[in-house]
Structure formats: C-alpha cells, structure tokens
Amino acid sequence: MILTVALGWGVAGGRAQGLNAEKPLPDIPALMHEVETHQKEAEAVQKDYLYHAVDMVQQLDGNGRVKKTETEEYDVFWVEGVQVHKLTKKNGKELSAGEQQKQNKRIDKEVTRARERRAKAEAEGKTTDSNGYEEVTVSRLLELGSFSNARRVMLNGRKTIAVDYVGDPKARTRNRLENLIRDVAGTVWVDEDDDAISKLEGHFLDTFKIGAGLVVNIQKGTSFSLEQRKINDEVWLPVEVDGRGTARVFLLFRFNGNFREVDSGYRKFKVTSTILPGIGKPSDRSQ
Image (cartoon, rainbow, N blue to C red):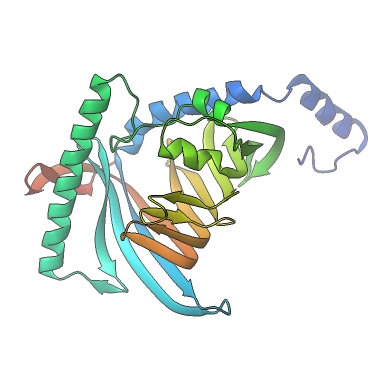
C-alpha cells in the first residue's frame, strides 16, 4: 500500500505508519455482512440505470489457437424489478424485425416467470435475487468456505480491502448454487469507503456438473473475474467480466476458450411507453 509519496522518509513516513496503526483491518465476517447490506440498499439505485454490454466468445482449437470468434450485444435494464438483457446485435449485425419481436416475447416471459418465482419464494420466507433465484447469504457463505488474508491495497485510486476465499469441499450444501460456491477459490476486493465489491477473481477447484454434465458442465481450472466501477458517484456497476476455460450451461451458453463482456454507456432511464404487454421501453432521463 502506498503510504506517502516517499514511504519511510522521516516524519512523513512515521506519521503515515501511525495512521495505519490507528485503523486496524476490519473483521472479515463483519466486512462481508456490510457488503451484503450495501448491495441490498444499492439495488434500488441500480434499477434506475441502463447500460450496454458486448459479449465476445473465442473458441480455441486443440492447439490453443482461436478458431472462431462470436459477439453479441445487449441492452441491460430493469423491468418491474427484474433485470433483463435485450439482444440488439449478433456478430456486428442488427437484429431483423422478426428477431426483435422474438426478443420482446422472450423478455416478457422472463419477467413473468421471475415475478412468479419471487412471489413463491417470498411466501416460503426465502431471500431471492431480482430474477427470483434463491440467494446465498453471507452467513451461509461463511459455512461453505473461509475468508482469510485481509490486506489493504489501492485499486483504481481507491482504498480497498482484498480478501481471499476458498470453498470447503466437505461443507454440506442445500442447493446447486451452494455446490458451485463450495468448489470455488479466489479473491474479493471491497471498496473501503462504500463497502461495495469492486473486483473479484476466482477459479474452480474441481469440475462442476449438474445432470451428469448435460445441464451444466464447468471444467476444473476454469477461471473468471468481474470488475465494477462507481458510476455518477452514486452506484457501482459492472465494467468487465472475463472467463477462461471450458463451460456449458444448457444449450444457452458454452465456450471452450475465452469469454469477455465489456459494459459501457451507463445512463439513467425511465419507463415511458409500452413496447409489449407488461414491458416498458427504456429511455434517457434528464439529470
């Protein structure tokens, strides 16, 4: 960590070290609970934002050379409390009118199903994400693995706490998501001022499968990373997602090589007009 312009030089260095001593590293479980609380509070602001995502998948051949590259572009926004990804381009080409109509119908169905899942989960007293899928709380996360090696670093010019995580292969799990988390190791970077995750990196300690690999198959060693930035000095949103290795999820997503998503074009929006039953069209909001 950079303490002063000249670390260790005379009084300035001594004063910096004194300040460090006055502020010990936070208790890791307490820090992660603060992150969880912040995320719940921040979601209300995140729902005001629209951004653009460009996904690129590079398929590799047996010699590790790129044999095929595919790209897809999405608008990411919220409809009735559900985050949706609307496909706008595929391999650089705009969607046809028919393809756009299919996208609208798909989003309509996704929102309806997500709301139904949320309602059912709430009736059972379960906590879910915006799409109605059960979340793993920090309390459970601490039972599925362990955090260690907290240290202060500077990340993108901001004071940050970095913490390592490793799943416990012997931990008892309750669902498939917990099975996945148990098989992961990595590092989480937490912005010290905002208690927000600014970056995370991880890799799979073992091959993860659902349905004997027919539903989900993520090979051992497959790695991933996520970076977020503070936008408009009020909300943390993703800027980049990366993956390397071999993974398949149903017939919807697969790669044997490299995956990268770059997010940009963040702007506030509001629902102004209907483009299909129950779904509004996002448009810029004056700030």
